[in-house]
Image (cartoon, rainbow, N blue to C red; front, side, top):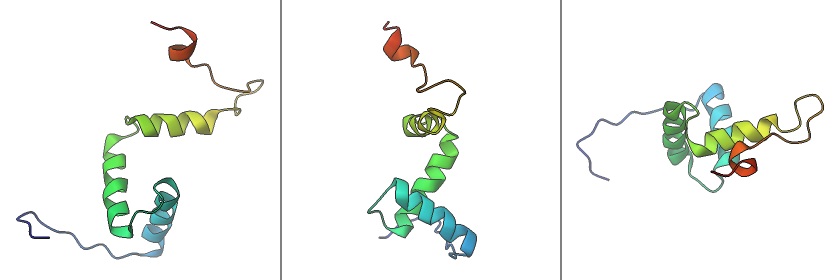
Length: 79
């Protein structure tokens, strides 16, 4: 696709391949080239995106001693 913007080639080293393999689990059916873009945007969001927060919450569920699920104040205390 024609563009006036700079393009950046990325060599798929073992480290990059591992990151893309993990990203492919999150965004299934997406090309490797598109995964690079999604990973960069997600990284730039720094965990602020709704999907990043949901993923972080899912990782914590059941990890706290005596907890079966995390408290969600938005569900438990409606505005």
